[in-house]
Length: 485
Image (cartoon, rainbow, N blue to C red; front, top):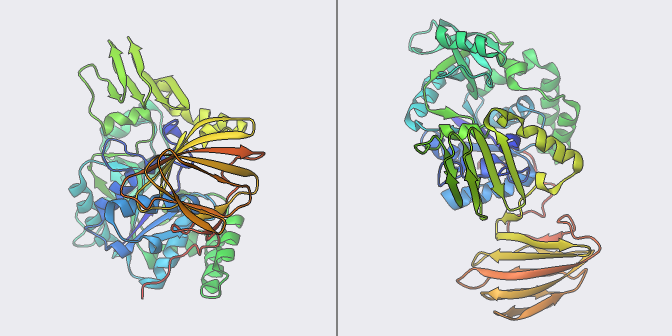
């Protein structure tokens, strides 16, 4: 069995907590672990660690890898399949199946989303085991969530006749997939007992899935063949980019599952939520006596049925009803609960404005620690950097800015051109423009420095890396992992 975890999404409906470079799967929502950590944890008893593959983009791979290392230890470099661009689920899963076909064509591929929450983990594992038995008989199986309300925000699956093979108790053929219904239709689905929410979790045999791609998506199959021929030649990166560039975005539901005659469904009563919006928090977080979900530095008086989230600043609320308030250091969201799905429209507007609030937070986490933007203006930016003991930034230079570092706590080991020296608390150093430099924490306590940048261009893409412990300087990394030895 092999797990393929889709982790390239941006979670736009969870803004302003979720950002493009810090999406929902990297956040702690209703747990002390992040959603991607929980996803890996729940599948590991079923799948060997080396058989877990995360599909994402190059930019998110470093942050995801850092979270997995902190939770599970070891290196995860060989567990990533990298998309050159987002083209929905069908191309990404096809690329994953191509890689797994090199390892084990008859292996069972379990497709999961990195940003879902599941409360009943044991029931989930039982459903996956049942689905795997059907996948061995060449069914393409989806986990259908038993609905507990007439939800209009999900697609549905109608279960048909039970699968005829012996040993497949609890597995039914899929009669049809249906789009998001209106309320009256959703109420009818709930009462019939034949319909399930489409969870986006699938189980199938690698060989069977590739055959269905060849049958139903010939252009995707042709692109996969070109990638397959390129493997080992050193041109697979270009072949994957070419394939994705030529394809239209298409989901695996539309491209394969709605067309195949081998679709089956396993009913899953597992406490599932896609945590798709702020109102979905009630599915993973306990409410107070007034029906509120309150997190962080909040003083509330007499509010009911509301979601109130505060980061560091104090947020005071009085007499709210059915309202969402989310406060972060650089953005605040206020909306009615019944408009929670429209948060995506705010993100679309931020994208049009090319606003930084769409991409990152004021505090940005890195494998070596984090930095917080304290102040910025014309030709200057002030940051606070915190470096974990034993960690170091990349060996780098900037063409358009100089930097002045003041050590607030800890000891900084500085590479400045061809010199290396230590800078202690209440001391400072200056890094000229276009000078190779590096910052390291050799001590036992976190290193905290204030960095003042000066120059004509102060964005993060003015970094030329020469060496990096986290391999961020390897821009031409292959989209497919190395085969196990």
